[in-house]
Image 1 (cartoon, one colour):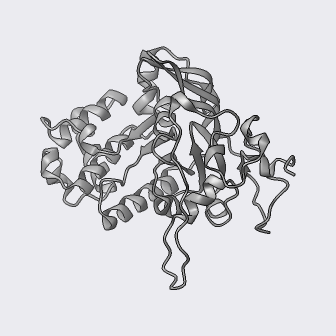
Image 2 (cartoon, rainbow, N blue to C red):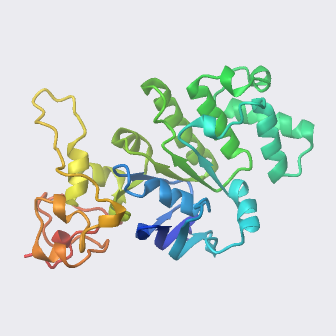
Image 3 (cartoon, rainbow, N blue to C red):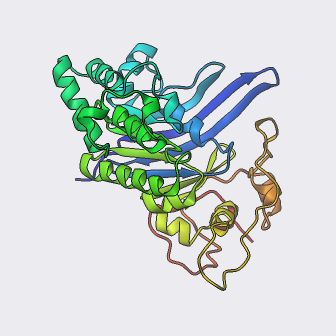
Length: 336
């Protein structure tokens, strides 16, 4: 029996009403995340990574709105639920780890008080049982002497330890799905590695599905099972992480992977992608990447490519793994 996805996103559209008109931040994004899987979502600032995560967990604030598509949790649609029902799901079934732990932790309350309150909101545990559970969670995320540290304030923890507390908060109701939005950006490299190992361990042991939003390809390569490369609110390429990192197809994905430094002595100059991400007020017709693409064709300026199984110009000669999809006219069988 095949497993069903924890989260399914189908043709998601997110719009923001402004004085300049309607701005479309997310335009037809689709993907699934299976139990115990980490889907890395990567792209430049403004690609739509964090907005996609916020839409899934119901945190798009007016003037933003989900204007189209569906979000399914265990096959049940959640994007159209009343705010109160969504609030009950958020925390119990789905959770979020933010980039800056100080946005998730109240500096006026002890860490234990915040954990216990969250646990009691989503479970029927007594105060003493909730405290014991909070201590267990702090130990699980690698905080030393949790029986003592539980009574500390957020400012008494280092950045890495605060992020561990935030992960403990996210886990407090044992959610099935977690959005991790740049969870390692503010941390030094050694602490980053510890947080990455922690996220992988949680997926392995708990079967939690994770959407890992980041612009760091090193974090993606180390943590994710699959990766989605986003550009201008759309998925440019999605597939198994080794496949996309070693054999990227979309010209934008190739540019991202070519910009990763290597330790090889004879390494060539890093790839530079000319230009910058288009503004939401000025997204080009056809393929949004066409003004920056070295292999642009007339068709790219008119017709928008959709993610599909690659055909046509597989010039790398690499065998493409199942599930690798790319939104590029070079690979949809219509390229000349």
